[in-house]
Image (cartoon, rainbow, N blue to C red; front, side):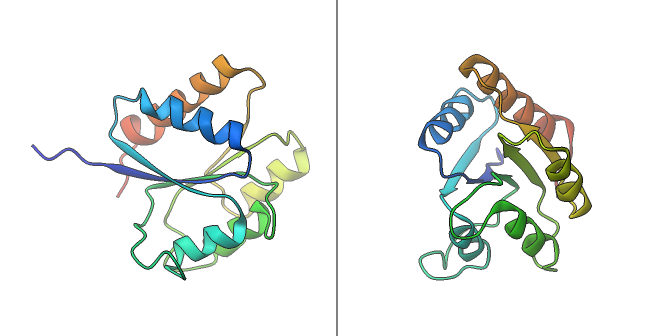
Length: 142
């Protein structure tokens, strides 16, 4: 039986949050590989197989922070969802912003989920496990 590896693109500039996501998925029962980019420009290069990413895999899920350098997550989301080759990829907004305006606007631009990062480590790891369970166990991805 072939075990599928799910590719997660984590678009995050905070090193502590990157480590927490990696730790949470390391304990996973699901076979995942996390690819990390630290700003919106790099995210789009990764997704469009630009420089340094010619062989980048198409992710099964994108975890996208909103407040990124160079190109923020709001712009990245719009670009992904307006691109016929990318719009099928689920995008989960994972951010510290609890702004109703951000929640409304990202859903209007077809974000698949909006999650506010929990403040404490235990809750953060539990949230990552819930994301994993929902996206890779409960749902059927193409």
